[in-house]
Amino acid sequence: MNLKTIYMDGNSLTLEDVIKVARNGIQVDLTDEAIQKVNKAREYVDKIVEEERVVYGITTGFGKFANVVISKDEVKQLQVSLIKSHACGVGQHFGEEVVRAVMLLRANTLAKGNSGIRLETLKTLISMLNKGVHPAIPEKGSLGASGDLAPLSHMVLVMFGEGEAYYEGQLMSGKEAMEKAGIQTIELMAKEGLALINGTQVLTAVGALTTYDAINLAKLADISSALSFEALNGITDALDHKVHEARGHVGQINCAKNLLQILEGSHLTTHQGDIRVQDAYTLRCLPQIHGASKDAINYVRDKVSIEINAVTDNPLIFSDDDQVISGGNFHGQPMALAFDFLGIAIAELANSCERRIERLVNPALSGLPAFLTEKGGLNSGFMIAQYSAASLVSENKVLAHPASVDSIPSSANQEDHVSMGTIAARKAKDILYNTSRVIAIELMASAQALEFSDPTNLGEGTKVAYELVRQEVAKLEEDRIMYVDINKCAELVDQNTIVKAVEEKIGELV
Picture 1 (cartoon, rainbow, N blue to C red):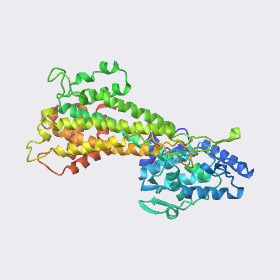
Picture 2: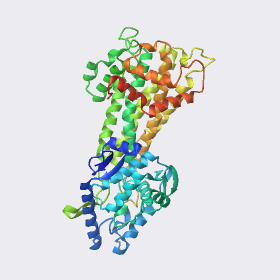
Picture 3: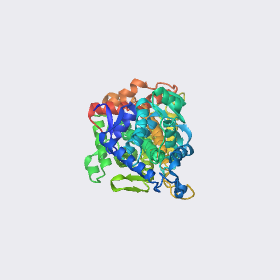
Picture 4: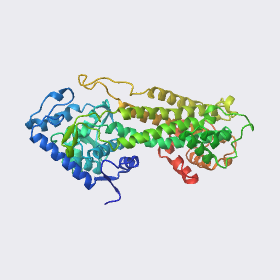
């Protein structure tokens, strides 16, 4: 086996594997066991067609048309019509990493051998992933209930030479992309169209990538808050492990541990009574606030780990039991609730972060020069940087409204409850972007605030973060174009540069 190839069996894919394939271009293939299961299920589907048994999605129509029987001669046309009619996505196309994650997750679920797809068809999808044929999939149009029907249909169009795809960075027809990549297009057979689109892989792909990034962003939030903690001479007594063990929440305990580890060796922190008896909540309650978000993110990670290895189409083939069972594994509710929770958890990181930025720039709260500039009035300093952070936080509050509490019945009320899970995942992704920019602003503001004390007195972890920020953004002596600085800090956030460097210095954060 090629150690640089991830072998799919439908059961063993990890979140880290998804990242490797989606972002790093790692190749994928099937295990021998998966191949056997796929072939066995396909033989069973062929038998159903040959015997002209009435089975949903194989010899019947779909949704409200489930009672319409399709003749043996029309089952192939049924699958092509399904894909063409369901390709109703709208809006901008998903980015390449999302599309790659979608293709990987769909291939992995098909590898379990409960979907009845032909091995040839599955290998075509895998070849597209390995050779970089990325279908143009619109972001909007899924209810997240009968799976991600519309967006996944755009993926399948390319498999039989229709639709559009990106190849080597260029958008072109699906037919041209497949020809350029040297991949033979397929002809859909019985059950295959439904097997390819009836599932939660789009919402799960978006949510999985966001979950991975949220884990790292929560660590960075600990680091950026530690910089503010020092700039404001925070009281470390509130971080004592006894306080947090007395309550017992894992995220809270871990966050307090992180902060003490990051602040180790600092001469800028204080003890209760040195300057004041208590800090404001966004300093004193950092473990409680960030810890709750960490617990929520870890909960979502557990759900993602299940879903990326789940069979989520309908009907399901159980060839060993001579059964085809029509169920509802395509329903996105388990992930819709999780991704709504994820969005809220990430938004709370931004909420506390923005309040620390305000505390840094407000002289009545910080004891520092107003807006962190020595010549206030002539210069505005960080005044509008805080506005920008406040705007992003306010937008997050709108986005954090749960999508999963909404449902609009579809398919003539046959599908009378839908999850809106794809909207929940997309919203969480948008919240993560906004939060990453708020944290970038806190990194800038806290670094500037530390110029009014002595950055050489920083803790072991915060010193690393401060120096990385200063490599990209100089001390603000007088007003300059601020968005340039924000973008430079945002690049550090997006590349996870600060977390990696701090962990290399002080050990892994949790």
